Length: 349
Ligand code: DAH
Image (cartoon, rainbow, N blue to C red; front, side, top):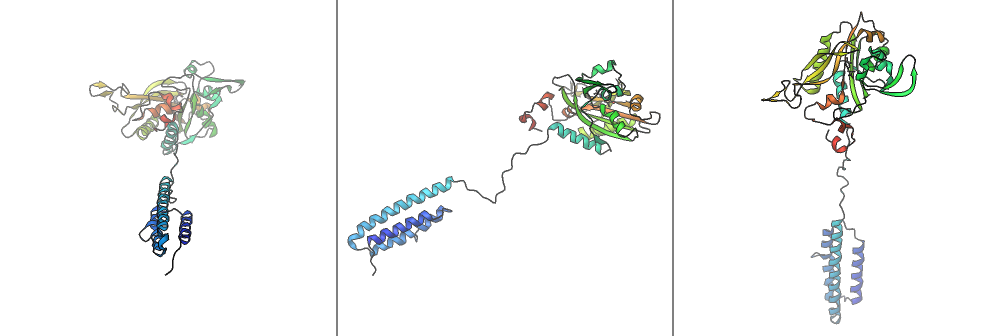
């Protein structure tokens, strides 16, 4: 029979301690079984006590007990550590970083462009800082004409051009009309949609000093008010939903004759102005005014080099912000919020 000395026992214990240091803790449960399980390394080792001489048995028992306690403590520690170390599954899909989105007005501009592209309009953009000539004079508003007062214009300080006058921050997108006629060298057909920034000296809950307009211009042979009305109805249905109607009311603009204001029926009361017995609080009349339109004035066609005896055209121009905020379910009662840069507001759209 092979006898086991205390020294042998100590060496074995030391060896196991060493081994546990080097073991990788992938699964603490497995480690527990490996060392302290029924057929584990500790039990195997403790069987050696049979071969220890009688006088050493007591010390050997103490050694084994101490070792068992230290094993238990160590394994418990390893298991605790393992639990508090975050477990990473490298095959799991990553965490998506928060994605931003287009500003609601950019979304509206994209949608408006798409709606008009479907009926053959070409999206164009003309300068947002332009000559007085394109913003006013070519639109049948000679210098000092009183109609200019309606556009609370920002003028840019600088030299005045003999032919084109002062420089302005465009107060409307109508500056694109004669520019488009010039681009096409006075040769219709023209079907343009000009969407750009505009500037006016006004600021309150329904106005910002910088805003956007979209301007439509169609010039060809035989264009009449029916084409304008059809286009308005088409846009109303596409942008506000089926059943929305358009209405034109006589108005005055220098660059169109006849001129109109354009209204769309209210989506809340469906154009009736009433909700049950009460007046519709959203529109008060059944309609929302969105902007102006009309048949292009012969003087404007002339300024663009187009023969007004051969060609006629219609035009319209509205604010993007106004058109957008009238949409069902938006209820933005202060238009300035759109440009406040507050992501808590913008994230909603
Ligand atoms: N430019 C006008 C404005 O800002 C709107 C407008 C009216 C545009 C009639 C047009 C038009 O093209 O035909 O108030």
